[in-house]
Length: 256
Image (cartoon, rainbow, N blue to C red; front, side):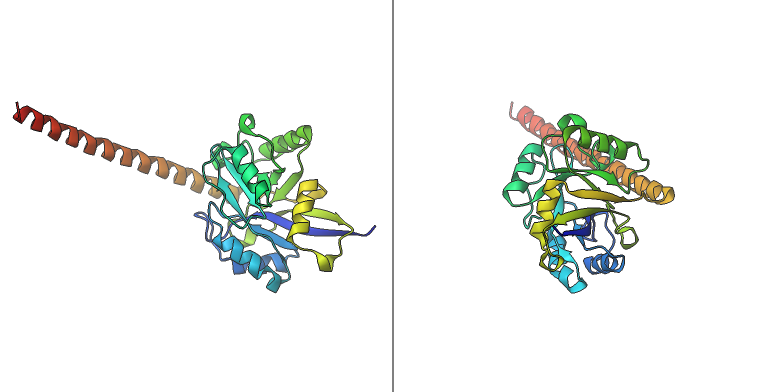
């Protein structure tokens, strides 16, 4: 039986992500240039540019597969192959079920890495696959930990670049071995079936340490800024509530 091997980078961000930089046209051009067969644009909690990328992909000789990196109650989840936004901040098991019900593949990216909203081990429930090689991880420790977890629990294992800009597309990718499928007849559904079956190999390398260090520094600063802003807003809300309560107390006293 003939076998077709294709190369997919299943975790790429466009400028539609809050931390992405480049339009999908450039991402697709880069993917075609370096010999990938497709990418999945998985922006954070938005899907419109991924749908556009999937529609444009054939113009670049690529497979068009939409997706999104959705925030669940306990961490991020890649919903590959869906054409609608999954519910945000829902329990992980409910989100996985939603993805499956909508014809997609539920993949846990960069698990156990809390600084990047990875799902903790204690919350990792049934899913379709686990990203065990993420090229942005600062060291190889969590990649190795994810690989051991996937092997121990029988999960298909993926590799992805997690690219946030054009030069990093394809730095890590997944090779899919597809039996009995002619390359000319390949489509997104065939890719999803192979992702579920686990007939794949991981390829790639981690980002250079300086680039990873910048990525972590930016992420840490963004997280600190978010909590500082949230704290300030909470403080202002408490102050306003105090003023209202004070005014009400004065009004009550004046009526006595």
